[in-house]
Amino acid sequence: MARENPLMSFSFSLRYLCHFTLLISVLSFVSFLFRHNTTLCYFPYDHNPNTDHTFDHHHDNETIDLLTFSSAWNHLTFSPSKPNKILKIAVVVKKWPQKSQAGGLERHALTLHLALANRGHEVHVFTAASPSFPEYGLKNLRFHLSEPTSGGYLDQASLSQELQTQNASGRPFDVVHTESVGLLHTRAKNLPNVVASWHGIAYETFHSDIIQELLRQADVAAGAETEQPPPSAPALTERAKRVVEEVKFFQRYAHHVATSDHCGDVLKRIYMIPEERVHIVLNGVDESVFKPDVSKRESFRERFGVRSVAKNREPPLVLGIAGRLVKDKGHPLMFSALKRVFEENKKARENVVVLVAGDGPWGNRYKELGSSNVIVLGPLDQEKLAEFYNAIDVFVNPTLRAQGLDHTLLEAMVSGKPVLATRLASITGSVVVGPHLGYTFSPNVESLAEAISRVVSDGREELERKGKEARKRSLRLFTASKMADAYERLFLCISDKSYCTIQA
View 1: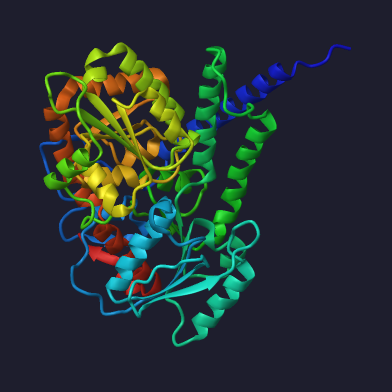
View 2: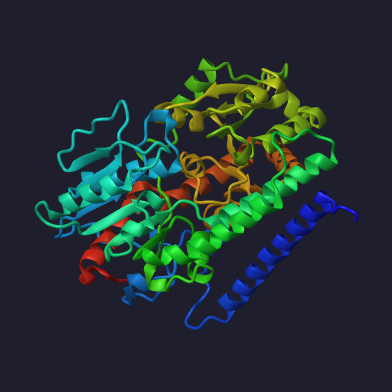
C-alpha cells in the first residue's frame, strides 16, 4: 500500500485551516454588518490631516453611557477635576518591569498604575519577586511579592490568599485589575469587579502564525535556509483550538479592556462577549519623557557617529528600529528588505543610516549589512530611548505579531516621528490610520523594500510634515494622561454606577 506523502498531508491541513479561518472572518464580518443597534465609528480627523476635530460621534449635551460606548475611551474628554472617591485598586501582573528589559505589558502596568498612584489612589501590586526591585517613594503604591513557580508564572494559590488578606484589610478593593492572565480565570470567575486588559489574544496569535508560515514557505521556495523546522499541521490546529478555549474562559472575567480597536471588535464579535463588558482603551506612553528635543537629536547622532556615506556631507536620513530583535518581531524580513534596498538603491546606500536599538539574536545579523549603513546600539533604558527617537527621521516596526498595540510606535509618534509599520488590523485601525501619519506595508520583503524606498524618495521635509501630524494625533490619543483618565473613569464606574455616564 502506498504511504501518504507527509508534505501533501501538511499542505492539505494548512489549506483547510486557512479556509476555515477565512470562513470565520467572513461570517463575523457579515454578522457585524447586520448587527442591530451598532454603527460604524468614523472620525474625520483620522483621515484628513488638515482638520483637528474633537470627538463628535455624539451630539452636544447628549448623555453617554460609558458601559455601552463602542469606541476607544481615549476619544472622550473627562472632567479635569479630581474625583470625590479615592479608589483601592489591586493590580495583578506576572512580573514588574526591570529597566530596559521590560516588555510592552510590563511597561503598560508601570505607566498606568504609577499614574493612578500619583493621582492619590491606593494601588496594590501583586507580582513575582525579583532580585532587585525599584523604589518609587509613594506610600499609596504597595507591592505584594510572591515567589514564581518553576515555570516562571505567578503562584495562583498564594496570590489568591494574599488578595483575600488585603481585601479584608481596611476596606475591600474597588477593582481588581489583571494584566492579561496574571490572574487566571479560575480565580477571577467569582469576582464581579475584575477587569482584564488584553495585550494579545489567541485569535491574533493565529493570524501571526499564518503570516509566518507564508513567509517560511516563500523562503523554502527561494531556497533560503529556515531558522527552525517547519510547524506541523497539528501545531497549527492546536493554535485554532486555543481560540476556542479563550472564547469559553474569557466569559469568566467580568470586564475586558481591549488595547486596540481591532481587539475590541474581535472580543465583541468573535469571542461573543457582551458589549457592555468590553471597553477599548488604547495604550498610552509618558509624554513628559517622549517629546521632541533638537538638542538630544544632535548629541545622540554625534555620540554614535551617525554620518552620511556621501561625499557631499549631506546629513543622513536616519531610520530607527527598537524592541526585541527576534524573528516574530519581523527582523528577518527587515534584514532582507534593507539588504535589497542597499543593493539596488544608490541614494539609500549613500545617504541612509539605520539605528537598531534592542536585544536579541538579530542584532549581530544587522551588522552584516555594513557599519556605514547600520549601527547596532544594544538595549536602551527609557531616557536613552527618548534620545534615540529624537535622533531618527522615521521609525520602522516590522512586527509579524498582530497582538496588542506596540508601545514603540506610540513613543515614536509622541516624539514627533512618522512611522513605517506592518499593515496589521491593530495598527491600521488605531495608529497609522492614514498616509499623513506614516507608511504601511504588507508582511513580505517586496512590500517592505518598496516602502523603505518610498521613505527615501519622499525625503526629510515630507517626513517632518508627517511627524508633526503623528505627534498631533498621539497627544490627543496616546499619552499616559489620556490612558490614565480612561482607566480611572472605568474603575470608578465599576465601583460606583453614578460614574458610568458623562455629558458629551
